[in-house]
Length: 151
Image: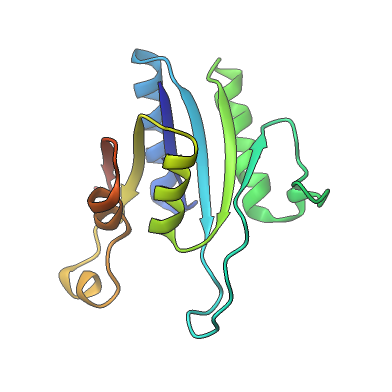
């Protein structure tokens, strides 16, 4: 089984990772840890960079850049190393795109069987104006989606 776990390093991320660990203990799976870096400005029409799939012990991207200089890369590699110490086959992905597009794209690209992500539990006004990543993923996913609630 392949499990895509989307984390944003908020307070909820630790809970999402814990739930992923529980699931993988009962259903052995390969885990893809995904962190999405959204475009800096929705006003500027710049295409997002290509996603990077990294083995855990590789800290360079395809162009030879040292990824551990980015705080997200270092955090993601730390989480992946912790999972690997527990015997979980883990890879990391850093995507530069909007969250829903990146999660759906990586799930298809890596032929995952399940997606797991957290829900921050924002109010109705927030969802009306901004939208919900978890709702967008549920609507577009071609595989089961597990939502870890904030509370």
